Image (tube, rainbow, N blue to C red; front, top):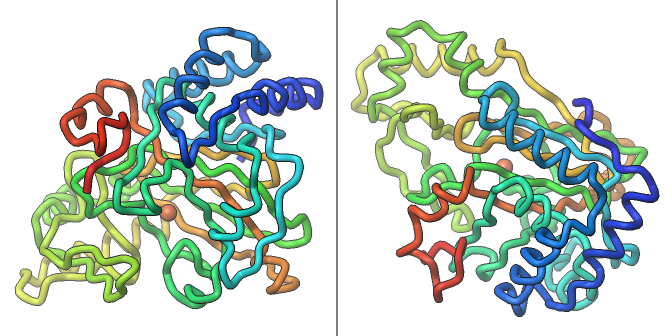
Length: 329
Ligand SMILES: [Fe+2]
């Protein structure tokens, strides 16, 4: 995908300086961190190109025409620690003492009108998650695995679902080629007959993760609800008691996934990719692996966002500890 904007070196440095000056640690003082982000957003001290890019993201998403965006050469922490694949997350929290990447994504979210979202009982309630290979997930369908990920959307079985996934590449080895692929729900619907679409809107399906780290409830569900999708390729299946037509509809959906037009993006270090989560599906494809150990150093920062403030406010009685955006589980 073409970035909608590439920050110049001067802009990147200026942004880096602004977000570096934020004193709060987003992992230990999230409310204070957000207050500083809001103050920075109001100050308009940042380059004009940032507000223009965020305005474009907001208007293109609102029109529904374009729902994936890339910003390139974004600020990323200067001194990122090397992380071992045994326990990268605890190493990150012990060694990463600057929060440039976190503050930049929070600033973009603020300027684009997309409040941040997190879950109280997931990722220890942190608003900034990491996608990096962890040995114990090797070979699984976890985002922390070291292999391809099938088409899916994040937290699709949860009663509170993220609208947008923001991925900022902190470390992306130049020699290795991994793509994030997105297909929009509207494109899937274009490929389906009204009859199959109707069957996909009935609770004829089951998504049974038999893994403790992805303990979704294995209850009957539709694949399509309004414009939202709930589907994990190769895992979502037909309920044994469902009519035969449901099997045909699932095959048609899989064909739509194969034939539909997709957007592919290779996240370079400093790329911020924003993709629609509920109304589309995404996957990870390792296109060229030259050295497996080097591919495993790819490190993305993942943040969930609400579509807009109104959507976030609908969960206001669910905030854990009164922290806006933190869903009580
Ligand atoms: Fe995902």
